[in-house]
Image 1 (cartoon, one colour):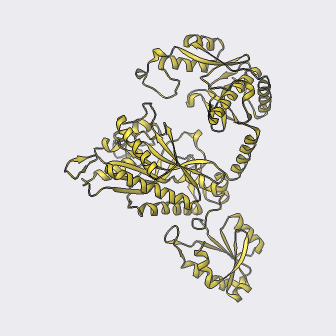
Image 2 (cartoon, rainbow, N blue to C red):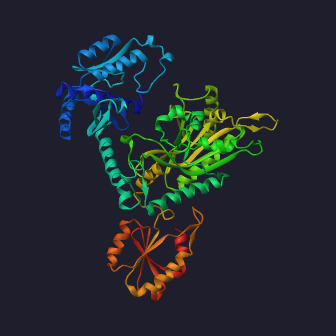
Image 3 (cartoon, rainbow, N blue to C red):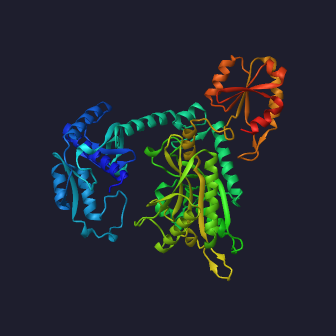
Length: 600
């Protein structure tokens, strides 16, 4: 039986094919790139030469697609030889398809990435698959549904530009996006979700709440955090540190620039060399880079002295910024930036200690996200059969079995995803669900048997022999910037009391109560919250402006301040304050105000 997700995948793939057929009828000169399935829908890359599809054209394309769907045309699959396919596409002037077929013939792949063709048995690739519906035929491996009438509900919803095969030196094509679900109800629910997501857009809220900004003079993808945003990220970072310190991690510090030799030895240079910011020194001939990750540096701290098995596990942590030269077209608010602050942790352990180290990190992640009000699920990110990974397969098998064993012992629900591992080892990726049901990969725990070998890391075992430790990578928040993009939208900017940049706003009814307000603020200045973040001083502000009380309340609510205190002459007389929380008002005695706030 075909699983539902496979059926929806086939529907979306079929709709991409139908959209291409409709566009070909409307613009016979159209050239086609690729048309894959994506989350929630599909797209197709189109080249109309000097013409361009506009938003106004989307209803016309939809109408033509619905004609094809109503006709309930069968999807028919057939194979042709590669040479015949190349000839066919050349005759049809489909230059992009020809390029894909030539790569398939010569390299055995259509990937934009370079491959070692010596590892591929190209001689076995002698034919390719096409699908036909009506008069339209398209190079495609499928799968498709049985006929055009079985594709569910869809809507074309946006256009974008996309370089052919993601290469900025190649032509810019038009990407036409569609969303698709099994039925109209699911499609309507999707657009309701998108409407709510638009309201929660962290870029909009970040500006409204004065959390962060960007500057053309500073550069794209390099966010600047304002006082409130800096407070928010500092508090979250401190809590992550607290959770790790409670589990024996010690803080270290590393520089932001390094010799590229470090990354060549770790293996990162070969995998991510094109993502590095290269630094030119006026004093040394060393090839330098802004650090794109921290693990090789922490490995060097470990390597600075010999360790005994009695010393292990050795646990390092720091909140620090790395830099990656992300493509301009992929930058998006805080969710994709070029300066990335991480709550990075690295433990060096004996094989027998791995389970306890990973378990305590799993517990730390669970504690963090429970406090943040986000449900977690677990993904075991393992390697696939490609050549994208370092190290012997036997080490990978050992690491993957170890992680799955830990997940089972902890009775964690998990799924296994092949191809999602880091190049040096498998991962436990925590998937957090936000307030409107979207899933995000945030916290991660990773095993690494490779870097310790490449750096020659050792410890003296109980029998006196020298052994290689296992390196355990972990991040609870992950990228602060990306986490904040998720968390701002999850909370809709209404942060929990403990982490809100401005926790309390005191509003005066008139200037007669300024003396009483001083008494209240004196109490606040001495107040320290203890949970969940220890030694967290109360953050408050006073609005004693000449504006009306109504305007002051509106301003505080617009800024989403968790607690509003209203102080008037009657409150002073009764030694009380009026507390406004979640739109509800109550009176609290001044002597009990600290107890009230500490209980929130």
